[in-house]
Image 1 (cartoon, one colour):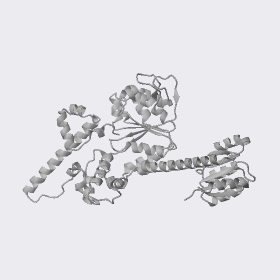
Image 2: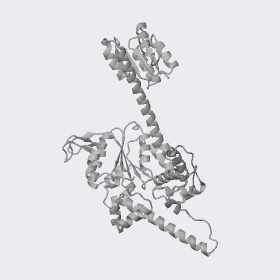
Image 3: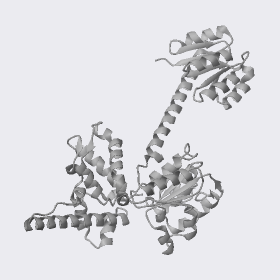
Image 4: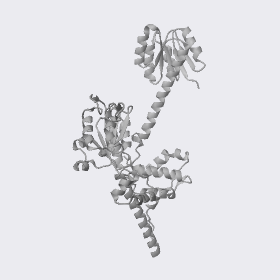
Amino acid sequence: MKRTILIAEDEEKMRRILEVNLQDQYRVLLAKDGEEALRLFKQNEIHLLITDLKMPDRDGLSLLHEVKRFSPEVPVILITAYGTIESAVHAMKEGATDYLLKPIKMDEVEVVVQRALLQADLMDENRKLKEEIKSLYGIDSIVSKHEKMMEIMGIVRQVADSKATVLIEGESGTGKELVARAIHLNSQRAGFPFVVVNSSAIPRELLESELFGHEKGAFTGAVKRKIGSFELAHRGTLFLDEIGEMPRELQVKVLRAIEGYRFMRVGGTDEIDVDVRLITATHRDLKSAVEAGDFREDLFYRLRVVSIKLPPLRERKEDIPLLVSHFVEKHKKEVKERLLEVSEKALQTLEDYSWPGNVRELENCILSAMVLSRSNRIEVEDLPPEIRRAELMVSVPRDGEELRRMKWQLRRRAESEVERVFLIEALKRNRGNVSKTALDVGMDRRQLQNLIRKHRILAKEFKGIS
């Protein structure tokens, strides 16, 4: 379907030239003045307006203002004579996309029209992408009916438009980054960057440069200037994940930076001013870290202007059915849109499980079950082994033999669950490093690897957890 171009030009000859040259590719509407153009604009879906700057009754600038008031996204190209270039430049500041100089060259017209429409397409695509991102990561993406989570969503809405620093605490996998993104996307900063820095995933000797940037020659290997995360997040939000892992010597520099939102690059001499909203997150108990001397007390209170503590999934079991439905819908493309439901027994098994990996573990479990399911229904047999093993037996044994068998099965399941939770917590403490974990727990490295393989745990998943 051809796109529609509206041409507003008081010279009939010029209108005719533009129409003849553009009508093969576009649907062209003609107006002899600004008033007629405005009437046609309101009656039709217009994709581009070309208007002369000088016209009787309503000039091109006045038409531009009216069109932008009705449809800000429609591109406007101005036609002007050499003597009024300054007016055309002024009009571009008012929202015009481009301008053409008289006498008009048709090859130039075609290029300018194509460029304007392409720019409009890109802006429309960008707008749709932002809406999609907001639907994926905004407040509505936080699926819950738990009282505590509802309270948290209320806090998110309340603090979104302030500049107050927010500290988000919670176990790994509870969705701390999701909450941080929701705050950003529901604020007036949503159109600007959301920059994430994970303090535990970056070597401590590089973290300062990552945050503040560096000048060329600041240290060995600094072959050019690097812009840091504080600068990249200008007018947007900087999310410092796992802030509790930040080296103490760097904490004082972060404190100075956020007190006046001024800092210097590594090796620099000039202070840089930024407008940044800071959100931090940690799985550690920062107050205990302060008492232990591992975290600065002044930075702690500066970060915790607003505090949000996310409950683990085991404390909000009523959310599991909602989350399961959400993840089935979210990942349906992974199974080629195959309609899937979850059996009551499988759902009960999911609700009975302790979920040490929280919402992230549940999502991975559902995705795995969807891929492995051989029918349109997810059964207990489709769930990962460690979750099936955790299924509780509620039937009553009929005789001594069945009692002995059930007690043996329960012991095996309990042992397996203890092993699995033990591995997860040990790997978390050591950020997925198997050698350090083996040393930490006093086990032989090969023995630990065999146990990790037995429970199908991926150590690398614990390197950059939030």
